[in-house]
Length: 128
Image 1 (cartoon, rainbow, N blue to C red):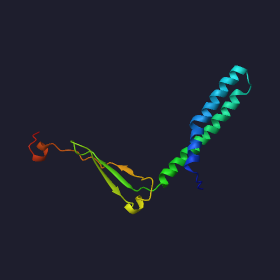
Image 2 (image 1 turned 180 degrees about the vertical axis):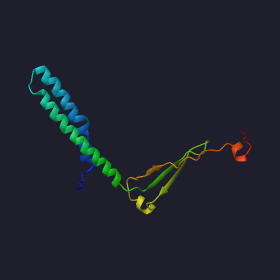
Image 3 (image 1 turned 45 degrees about the horizontal axis):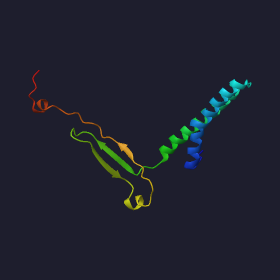
Image 4 (image 1 turned 180 degrees about the horizontal axis):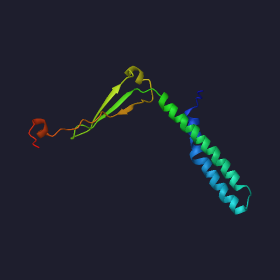
């Protein structure tokens, strides 16, 4: 099952889960303690349960969104040169398509480091 929501709705729900509901639960705990309101634990537990559920659903949504978002290419970071880092851009989306967009999605990749071999070993002049 796939549910598509707008970025604005996602950001609003994320704010509710990360800021709104925890703030409401904390505020209710203090006010209930001051005024002697009963069932404080039940109310706070319910708010926390809803918050946990919402946070979990948003986390799953975020992960599936990231997996389903197509990449426009790779930003390759090569740190094999001791003098400087080298960056290269490998685009898979044609320039004519990129020109029409507001955003570009790239994967960041790092080629595996090749171990450097000391010159003595390369020359065969190492003695045991």
